[in-house]
Length: 274
Ligand SMILES: Nc1ncnc2c1ncn2[C@@H]1O[C@H](COP(=O)(O)OP(=O)(O)OP(=O)(O)O)[C@@H](O)[C@H]1O
Ligand SMILES: [Mg+2]
Image (cartoon, rainbow, N blue to C red; front, side, top):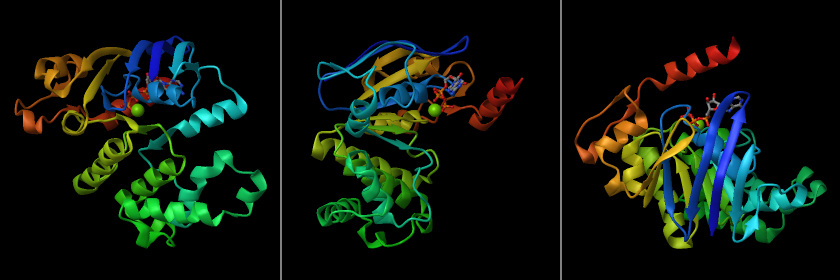
């Protein structure tokens, strides 16, 4: 179905993703884990063609999508919808219009500018919101919703494209534990009931273990683990997260913090600014 071959992305002298190869043979729910800067977001963004690869290939159902441009690229981006940590909704626009934006890639520009949507699309949008348990919020402004509700709106917008693959870049990193669970449950259900593939960057090992059939561990741009949650032992986790990770041995609540992500990020930004 989806094959990634030796995919590489360099930023200057820094290799963010280093010859990554992965293959997905049938619909799956895959978690990508790794410490800050491991290359998780860059990998997802290359899959969706938000970021161009320096070299390597992405092949979906026999078709090379790596070099698609224009309409072909937009069609591919509909096939592999992306959701983000910060939801990326239009805050002042109502929920249902945000969801209808998911049809943007296949609509005339003028119709979009004037917010003209076919009734069938509006019904479908409401149906998707209902499935995600938030139909009652359809007329509200997106900014009036809680984080967990907003992320479900973003999922609804993605579903509006009827994608084969949903790429989620840390979908629950900004949410409290209860909302995180609601959002992960929704993604799991979309995978199981619709047969869509979900590939999610996750910042806790525990979530990857609980929700995913397959876990991919990245370190310094490379895949250092690719297996089932059962194969992901504490020793393997230690290799993925490196020495500055803290662990508990209890497998039901393996708490791995990539130590102080805020600090790491700030350091990276400071480095980049020099
Ligand atoms: N647009 C960019 N320009 C320059 N360097 C970049 C850019 N995007 C990412 N990088 C670098 O590529 C590497 C991988 O970054 P990436 O964001 O993919 O990591 P990540 O695993 O998603 O990290 P995090 O867990 O913090 O989100 C880092 O060294 C980062 O600084
Ligand atoms: Mg990231």
